[in-house]
Length: 161
Image 1: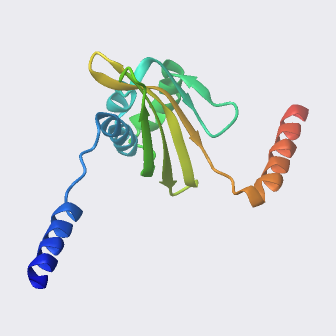
Image 2 (image 1 turned 135 degrees about the horizontal axis):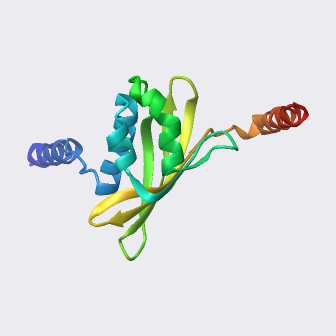
């Protein structure tokens, strides 16, 4: 009897443990967005944005609407140069109306290391589109004071030029 119970528990654990969790349509849009950037696929990348979409970059001056961001990215994408951010630990929440979602995700990038992406998507004609994407670099609290001082110094240097 104990063998049967143990065998049943083991079978249930194996079946449920190996089950693939379905990616939500919001996940799929974000995955498509990151994959297109890595392939330098300008069309698919910018098709992921809502018409009023905004991209906020890591620099305080980087706030781009879609046409401005496309103009910035085009020279890179046209040369086959994209950027690779590998997503992990993604969290998605949905508005009660089911037509608005917001997310945050941890990202890995060869140049910038650990980053965070966050933003808002909205459902447009049955497709999830990015209304806002915010790329940031999380700063460990123990280093925040030093980093803030570096930013202030850089800003002061920029003003004197």
